[in-house]
Image (cartoon, rainbow, N blue to C red; front, side, top):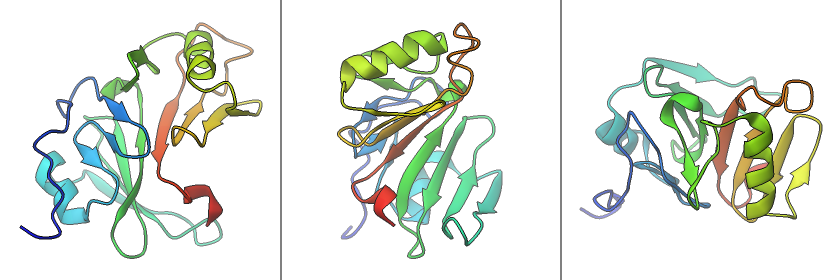
Length: 157
């Protein structure tokens, strides 16, 4: 069918270990999918959340049991996926949320030494990933909170 992304080769049981392909996909969710495409691979969301317009007006779909929140721009196209420990995201063989925050932080910097670092997060524009670990310096054995997959230009809006 024209316009429908091929999801047959995408990895990841929607409930466990989501393989990340930088700037492209998280588990079975591919950036560029429509809301209908995402609904076909994950089912209907538990809740829909609209971000405040002063930040952006993206719509996020919340999947509580899966631990992933696909985000859609004004046109209804998936432009990011926010992942939590439940979906166990893996990038280049590295588990980024199922380990201590200090381990995830170090692994992230191994993947991309040029990642932009602030007190609570690391952002890799090369990989299209942002690791959020607010307690990494105070409680390094705690898990990181989330991992965001985004496409080129996401932060330029």
